[in-house]
Amino acid sequence: MNAAPGSPAAETTPDLVDETRQQRLAVREGLAVGLATAAYGISFGALSVAAGLDIWQTCFISIVMFSGGSQFALVGVLAAGGVAAGPAAIASAALLGVRNGIYGLRTAPIVGSGLWRRVAAAWITIDESTAVALAQPTPRSRTVGFWVTGLAVFIGWNITTLLGALIGDAVGDTRAYGLDAAAAAAFVGLLWPRLKRMQAVAVAVAAAVVAATLTPVLMPGLPVLVAALVAVVVGLFNWLGAPTVPGRASLRHVPRP
Image (cartoon, rainbow, N blue to C red; front, side):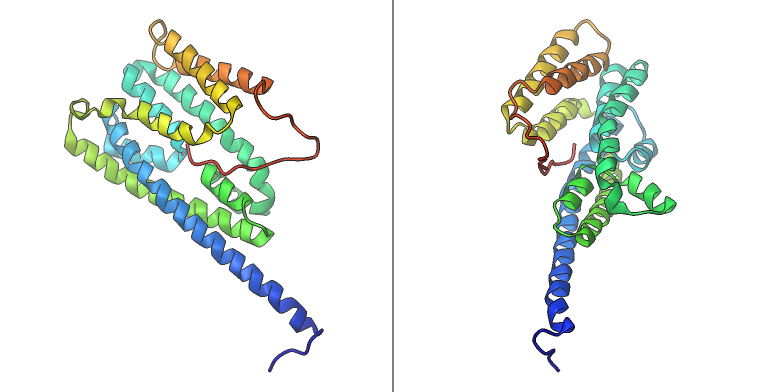
């Protein structure tokens, strides 16, 4: 029996239908992002084995660290400098991981209260889960988008990490296939989608020049740290960026690093 016009049922039904639709869209977006991101895990697994880590160490890093950019930084520095570059590799990975703490400030209202909920959310607070969640129009769909995306990426990333590690272990000497340069290529691929504004280009160029200049004279890993500090300074001045309007903020969807 249809509700009479003007009745509470007639007024709330469209809202409920729209909310359900928004949640379904959030689920679809989260699963799509998770599937796309999983492909990077194969590269990481192969590169990690090429850097000298074994299969189980590689899988452990993906489970515990679970931050693509930080993981690539870690194995990239280890591949270049070996065990001696361990401290610089850890520092580079930690520096890139700081952004996840900033994401946590934005996603805290979405996650909700509860100790275990917050602990689990901290594990999957990454570029993808943050971007999908904040892109949703309603509070409930933002929550759904966050959890679906985070879990989808976590599961897919760890499965493909194992596959990549097995492939890398089977290949043997990865330098014969040019995979020793894949870490740098992966970073370029992660950086490219961000170069949409002059300020971002200026930051990238300044950091690249500093890193290239210091690489011959400093141990592996240290040029990356110095270049990161230079990038922060150039980014803070915002010489080529659009002026900030008080009271207004914008969110751009950023792919996973």
